[in-house]
Structure formats: C-alpha cells, structure tokens
Length: 102
Image 1 (cartoon, one colour):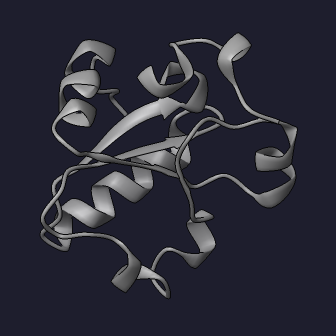
Image 2 (tube, rainbow, N blue to C red):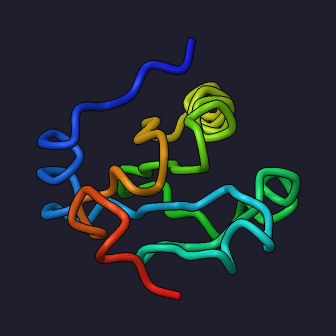
Image 3 (cartoon, rainbow, N blue to C red):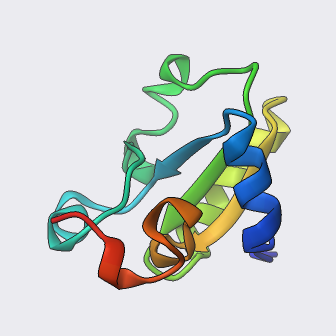
C-alpha cells in the first residue's frame, strides 16, 4: 500500500518540475526538512487548491505511511502523485539527512 517510488525516478520527475510535498507535522518539520512544500496531512484536503495539477507531486513524511496515504488519495482525485517515503530520501536533500535544512 505504501510502496515508494525509486529515488532515481523521483530525481527525474524533479528535474522535470515535480513538486515535493512534506505532509509531516510542524514539530517534525522543525526538527529538519529538505526543500519542499510544507502541507501537513490533516490540512491536505483544505489546501488542495495549492497543489498544481499539471506537475507530478512527490509526497514525503517521516516513515512513508502518511505520504503514502496522501499520494493514494491525490491519485484518486486525478493528480499525478507518488510516495517518495521518508523525507530524507528526497533527491533534493541528497538522499540523506546531512543535507537537510534546519
């Protein structure tokens, strides 16, 4: 249910303009994050208009569960949405925590 898109595939999508969306909570975001749109999972439906329909969306969270839920729901709404999984896997973070912003 929460399968992750391969990092190399995600990198290709980012190179083509994909948007990384972080669905963690504010305390989790404050602990560290990579370049992304911050949109906690519980705000996703209310802020749906902020997400582009013409670009792929790559969802991240702490473990991959919430990002999987977000990607699955957005796909059902007609978006090109993917579960990148834990935010540290993002190619924008270099695939690991050391490049993360605080």
